[in-house]
Length: 147
Image (cartoon, rainbow, N blue to C red; front, side, top):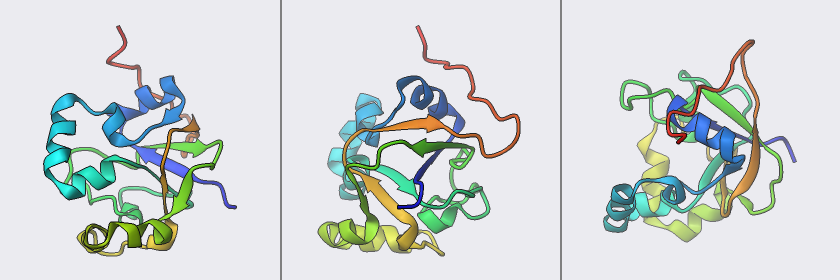
C-alpha cells in the first residue's frame, strides 16, 4: 500500500502533533459541534471518521481532489500541515465506505468539483501519525491550547 497522509490546518496541527493520533473529528470537537452534528446527517457522518489520502503533494490549489473546500470558502488552509499515517489498520478506501453512507456520500462527492474518490480513505478508529513537513523548514506551531 502507498503511504497515507492526513492534511490539516494550523489550528489543529499542534494538537495532532502533541497527541500523535488522528482521531475522528467529533472526538476532538467542542461540545457545540458535537451537538450540531447530531442534527445534521452529513456532519454526523463525516465527524465519525478521520480523513486520509494517498496523495503526498496536496496544497490549496489541488485539495479539491480529496474534498477539501477551496480557500475562498473556508477560513483556513487545510493542506498547510501534513502527517504521515504510521499504521493503516482501520483505514478503508472511500469507495468501500461510500455505499454504506448512501445519499450522504453522493452529496459529499458532488460538493467539491474535481473530487477524486480513488485518493480518499477514512480512518474508522484513531490511527498513529507523525508530522511530515512538505516544504523545507516547516515546523509545527506552538500549541495554543496547552495548559
